[in-house]
Image 1 (cartoon, rainbow, N blue to C red):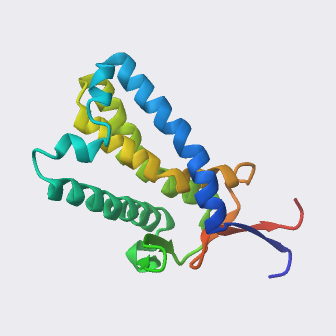
Image 2 (cartoon, rainbow, N blue to C red; image 1 turned 135 degrees about the horizontal axis):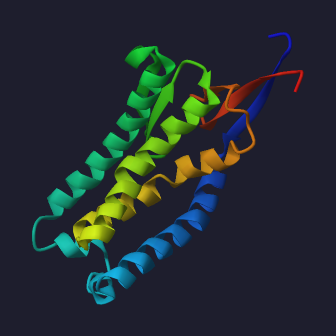
Length: 191
């Protein structure tokens, strides 16, 4: 396209795994510290294996179902948000699993405004992570805390993508990559 510059804002899986851990650890420490400070810190250490240890007396299958369900809902939130914001509906959304990495994904086939890409990228972390974390801080419910911890750390790849996109104009367009994590940004040459 004449007058348009394409920027590659994709991230290699190796980089995602390395940086993901570097981001995940501080998030984990911050969330557990805040929850432990406001509520019973001993409660966190009573269950050294977290959610699985806490629910062992109830049903390990329930925990597995919640974890898998959260992953599916995470991708669905991306898809529903982008479907709405692009105005193209679900026909612009593809879901799948990269079996070689056991990684589910949601891909939008339509270019969208960067601000819409960012909103869709942020939504699962907010809906499944930040909001339940806030609820756990208010109620002291450790189940909600573990749920929020899992889903906030599960959104680390999304947070990384938002970081990579910092400085991009919200009025430019992003095309989600179907092969690798990230997108391509299209901007005019005048900039």
